[in-house]
Image (cartoon, rainbow, N blue to C red; front, side, top):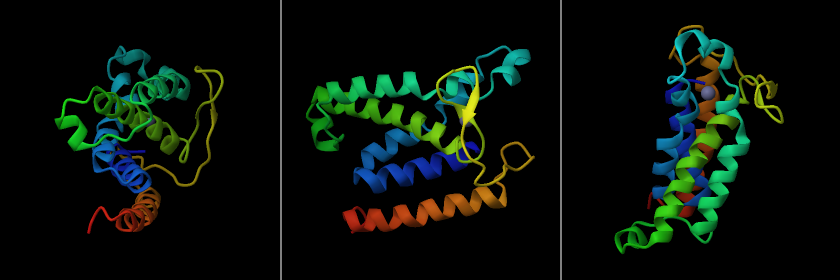
Amino acid sequence: MTGRGHRLVTFMAVGGTTGSPLAAVFSLMGAALPDTLERFFPRRTRNRYHRKFTHWFVPWLLLALFCFYRAQWNLPSVAVLMGGGEGALWSCVAFWLMGALMHILEDACCGKVPLLNPMRRSFGVHLFHMSSEMGEMSAGEMAFSLVVVLLSLAAWVKQGIML
Ligand SMILES: [Zn+2]
């Protein structure tokens, strides 16, 4: 999936599920993390390691759970954050990591990501195909993103975020 698709889908879906705009913003910031990490690999190894251990859900999930635990499972709120609440900070970091987890889930909708072995892409479905142009959204990706955005939008409205 393209970076744009990841950010859009993650932001909308997390906002719609949690009802917390702050959670949505932090997950948006983490939505490209697994691909961003790959940019630090030497160029010649990038293809070999693409969508492998950076796209393995286990370390992201463990780190996110640790942060949620430190946040006492609370959603981040601007009021608590402004009041200097340490829990809110942990909660923001947890949603930043959730953005990376969402990224992996989204990649699993249009290809394979690792499940048990971080060096083997073995889990995922082909709901749509990616464009062959780097960074361009394919028609399938647009349709997929649109469906998620519309469903999330309904959830946002239902949660009263927009009203
Ligand atoms: Zn990716």
